[in-house]
Image (cartoon, rainbow, N blue to C red; front, side, top):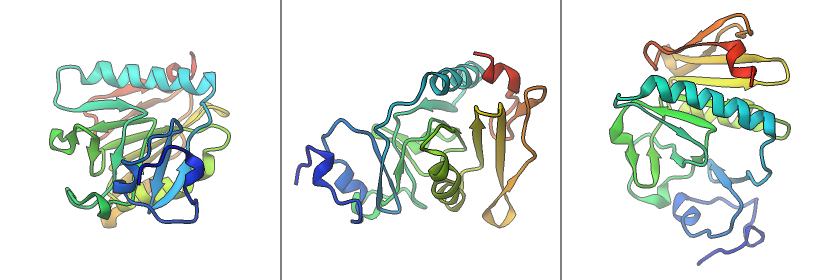
Length: 197
């Protein structure tokens, strides 16, 4: 059934990627373990400036490599295998930024499987989801690095996937420090440059 309005959906129901593909309304949504999350509120100016700066820095670094960086909206279907039965995929997210080092994970609909790096910029209204639900699904699905950018305090929280598939949090990166990535080889940025926009 074609869904043309978000009002036609039940936020208590469980949906699949197959359902998601039949939704034609304008609002942006994500599915996390089949549950619907609305992304329709527009990010603020500071959020967008910070996001643009990080994307610019990573994009420049990755020029002429097989790794690709994507800016939201870009669908990431999190599944442990390259699942082709869309009714079996129950998590579709749109990270602010994601880096995919394996080109086999990229198709015409977005990314299938875990990106290597995900960056989320926190803003009022999304902090709980980014720090709880998304943290858990990114960890479970094997995202190697997860950065949470905190504009209110000008810090970046970095989580790296270690043995036993668990995120280990590093100390917060402050403005005077250089932020680097293990998965984006050779990438470094002064944290102050992320926020000085």
